[in-house]
Length: 115
Length: 111
Image 1 (cartoon, chains in turn yellow, purple):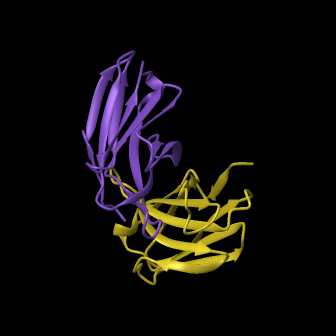
Image 2: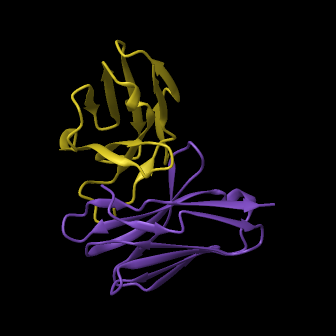
């Protein structure tokens, strides 16, 4: 199984809502990532988890709260978001981190719209 | 983080033609990778070239790497409509193995 599965595919939420994005991989990878991607831009790294511990937080606002319940699952909890947070949120995994090869396996993304 | 540049930003070609895009990066690398992204979808890994390699092939893809110029190129031969996508280079730092994405090249293949 070489898939990274993300749910939901689309999410519309108001600025006062609380929602979560979910990501799952069963490749035995020990590193998982959240990226944010705006239209016509490359993905921007938000968080890296390695062995279920937060290794990198790229100065992401606290309204985004990551969680790694186990080695296969990665969540991104969303609260009090702003319209400018509307974007495609991509989850990725790799065998380890830092990864010598660096090859990432991406999910299909969750398209988030904040009203 | 993003520290690479890609050119052109956009490329439109006829089916059957070749498409070439270039990538430049700033730090010393362990390897450089190319990914494809169809509109609104996830990224798919295409090919990886190590810092001690100069050229690599995979099917219709040919990648070159010039570490002295800190640049790489991706050639797609005999393009197909299905090759329509955005292509990103990703430089993997040899210091800390962090990944740096290029700005991306959007390729449109006309039937």
